Amino acid sequence: MFGDMMGMMGKLKETQQKVEATKKRLDTVTLNEKSSDGLLNVTITANRQIKAIDIDDSLLADKEQLEDYLILIINKAIEQATKVNETELAAVAKEGMPNIPGMDSLFK
Image (cartoon, rainbow, N blue to C red; front, side):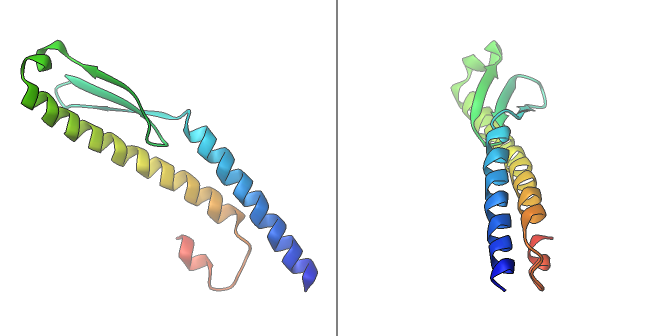
């Protein structure tokens, strides 16, 4: 019984280390989100850190339009990064979970 518990604890610790390594790796995964007309481009990591914003000069003339573009494209970039982040972390967590009856449905 204690051997099983020790094995499960070891597996959970190993999974925790893999999750942390995946989080670090996701800092290096960059995603780009562009406006449909190409006037604004946002680069973001899979950990949702904005790395660059490229604004076409034509947008600088209209503050309100620029603000609207920024809100729209940054929100899309965050949504895209969140999907990648959650998918990657869920895969690592599911891979490392011990086989506990009834728990497998939590990670589908």
